[in-house]
Image 1 (cartoon, rainbow, N blue to C red):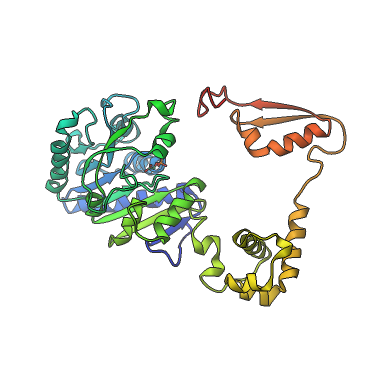
Image 2 (cartoon, rainbow, N blue to C red):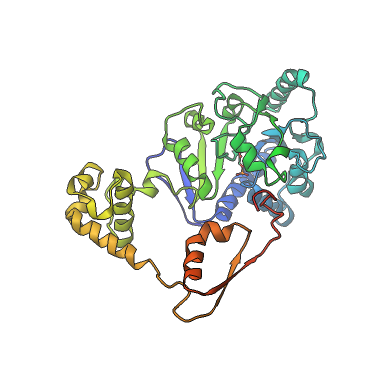
Length: 386
Ligand code: PGA
């Protein structure tokens, strides 16, 4: 399995080619911890997340249980969070999600499973949350905490503004988080406003932490959490202070890290044609100048001196990339003959979002264009958007 550490990050960061390879790596890490503790007759205390990110880990753990006899009878789990005012059997509750996705398919003991109870009343929340913390302490603390990261930079439901010392509590969800959950709830208006969550301070007490992020939509927040200053605006950045945290990413989620995105900023690079193109376009966007207007000073002032020396001057580099980009423009995407074009679009918006300009051009060339939507629009696209 190929993976590599990204240099110059504030949290050790490991990148895998695919999310399934990354999930498998974490599942094997959990497996060896459990096997080691089982053979010593010790419990294993895991902190667990919900969401789309950990699904692959749970799938691999179930496979390890069924096919390789991984024994969960001594495993104790604490889930990070739960929506407030959702009953345990509500289809959207994390309790139900955990049962169906994982617990029902391994031999964990019911009494060893802990998930915050979303049905408690508001005035007992403080007491209940203190009790949850006490249960973690009584279990001996969390050996391994698995985390995802939200687009707000949250861990658990510790939204921006949560302090480094925050404890398990009832909290209000950020609008971005509620929007991201809207698909599951068939509309943002149905997403609960509040949730119970382990605090940042609670999470930081885990002996070992693994935080995962997959997909391009996480790349920006991962970059800020891993390379930016530690700030309560991005609660995942507090992990910079934890002694044993690893960020585990797929390639897409690593895309904005400096060493991946602009490797020339962190050391010498081999100037391949693709990297030259990337650097020159990056420079043009950074200084806000057209490719053909870039100057030698622009290159010098933005850590691109080596590129200038090896392939310059600026005018030549700008022209080279400009010509390459011009060649990517297809003036007749439907060919030059009359005909009918059939476009397949997964949802009733992907066609316009991803190829609206092409559609206009096709129609401008008098081609007949039909779009086949491959869903009714009731999944992921709400009526008002459709
Ligand atoms: P996701 O959520 O795994 O569904 O992306 C992560 C999170 O919000 O913590």
